[in-house]
Length: 578
Image (cartoon, rainbow, N blue to C red; front, side, top):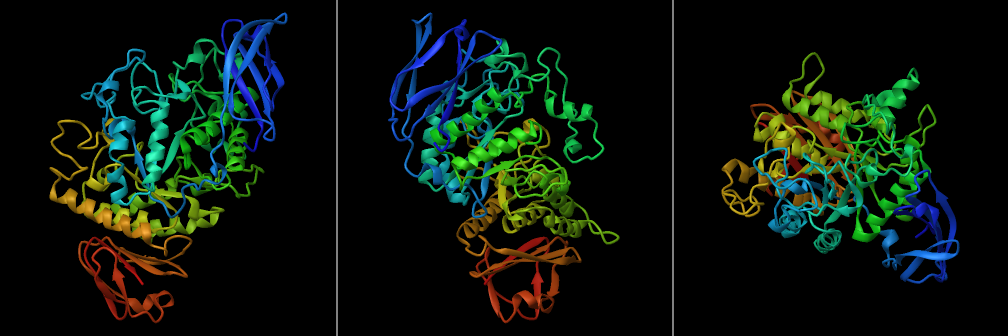
């Protein structure tokens, strides 16, 4: 790796009283750290890339120069070209999957004797049995729909007593949950996905762990976890980072408070903790072959650690991409965390991308509300896109209509499939990197966490409806799926999307018009939210249309005249390319 130093954490009875020795070419111990808990020993070793070779070697643990124990360590050969792997970017469309709710490919792992919770599909907050094998079985579906990247909510072990399916209460940062599969299966999934042109994005959590994490029973030090002896819960006041009037009390409670009673807050200010988390990230990227990372609750960990973490990841993988979750509808708060932002308090971030919650909020309002008194409706969405001046790189933002934490877009538009199409047309054609929640393409609904993350039809043996084969889907579901597929496949091959600019016009009469353009061509997007067809005079867009006479409707394939008046059907998106 670019960084030759590696920190090892050894855990065992009184292991901190022992002295480590390594006798292997190109590998030497540079530091040994003992902590207050004598059951831990931290070893820092340096790997000389010029002298070291791949292979296994022993770490001898001695007391009074006498060997007491031996730990085997393996140094692996880095794959050719690993450092220059391409991360996800605006050419991609991300398909988010909650693994427990997508497909049960191997029922034998539904219940694991060493893990607390088993499958109970009748409980919307319980485990339903989806797993890595189920995802692998259906990669063809994802590819044929036109998606290019997979964001999987956490696959790591969550050995909690209940409500463990979501994956955000991690109890072992180096182990895939056995109810999902194995580390090797995760690696195999990434390999198979790559063969089909699909990138894999890992969902990572740095702010907290699960209360049942093995180290909670024997903490290395009191400051490994914030408020370890007497938990204080976060106040969720994420404005503390930008607020010039903030109290230290509020700031500390936000950053160091526990996320919930089952999610202890990890202290990233401890340098041993920081190194552990950074190395864990790099190990997963290298081991399974990741193309990106989505970071949960990005503002909650120590802000300086997160900047250091992102910098070290990008140093190892210069073309990699990372997107952080700052759940705020205020673009000033979201932009604070993007790399290149000049912040008044001097904070320097190294995070390339963020989830565009401000646009998500505005999109849903635009679909549901009408413009009144020169505000709201599509005008509100237009004004939010105008806030792109606050971002160093708005094209790198991840834009979406919903995700696993938000009421599903089909529910948000009150079951109106036409409004859903308008929303998805916007997500897939505006600036940024689109993300779609699994099942949106078949009009899945949901308002509570359990129903938002409901089972994908056909993922379980005996399902009467199978969305993978379209068996049992309604006419409306088939229509929505075909619309999404055509749009996705067009976008996948549309050179006009990648590296293109966005120019938009002030919405009039609930019709929003914008253009994407570059040296490869132009795309005109017309979103008509009205209950009736609208005729628009194309001369008002002459600066973009120029001398062009016609374009092609990318959904129907029909030619469309670009002179005179354009008739836009009721509650319909028109996407015209030339």
